Image (cartoon, rainbow, N blue to C red; front, side, top):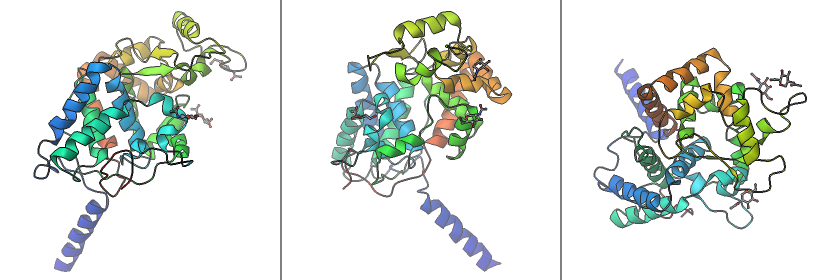
Length: 315
Ligand SMILES: *[C@@H]1O[C@H](CO)[C@@H](O)[C@H](O)[C@H]1NC(C)=O
Ligand SMILES: *[C@@H]1O[C@H](CO)[C@@H](O)[C@H](O)[C@H]1NC(C)=O
Ligand SMILES: *[C@@H]1O[C@H](CO)[C@@H](O)[C@H](O)[C@H]1NC(C)=O
């Protein structure tokens, strides 16, 4: 009996250390002023560029979906070894300097102690809170990885995904339909480039040109911004009408035929996910609570094994 208990205790210990168990007080002794240093860097970024919060939230999501939350998205390409940040969806990534500045400040406070992956997770939380969204305590103790490959960006859920593909992509990472709908609400911040919704407004399928689930006046707006042979790489539209405010406008617009991506519209294609969209559209509080829960879950996807000194390169 005692032996069984000991081996059970050991196996629990082993399991938790093998996934880098995270904790709220991870840096309490080793870097007590970590969080305010990160928050300052995020605030400084926002002063110059209102799109910084959207960029940080997107960057954290991208990081966690490839090799776990291990700051692989922050590594720079080396010669012809292209890193994630130089892979195809790189148009949606920017503001890396905010994380690099935060890391510099943190290294001055407590050298070699805090992972870039933790800094990014904290910055994403700050991005939401500083945009008027909910705040929460971030479990910490992530480790940084050594590998970043441009080709891996094909593992990110694509804007053209249907509900089956979205569900599969999320469940491979331990995330369920609740998480899918709640985390899609992150589209309350941000911008969509024409290339990511072109499929809905030109040659939708063999018999119709425009996705019939789009409200026609809204589809006309999208087409005027993004003509069929759009050459302006930067052209596009904000993901919701209140793009710098973290709110539930995204869900309200979905219900009005004003979704941007096929993957947004897909949330209305099953009764379960549609009910969640309606719930979040009618209650900011329900959305906030669900978002926080799912963010903590997503940002705990394990990965990495060391602490980088410079977020852009392995030691
Ligand atoms: C982004 O990805 C494209 C390939 O899709 C590549 O040509 C480009 O160099 C990458 N980097 C930047 C900064 O655009
Ligand atoms: C989603 O797309 C996949 C791949 O194209 C297809 O096999 C599947 O049937 C689609 N599912 C739905 C619900 O449309
Ligand atoms: C094209 O989309 C319309 C509307 O969703 C649908 O009725 C039609 O069957 C689709 N056609 C093809 C060829 O997929």
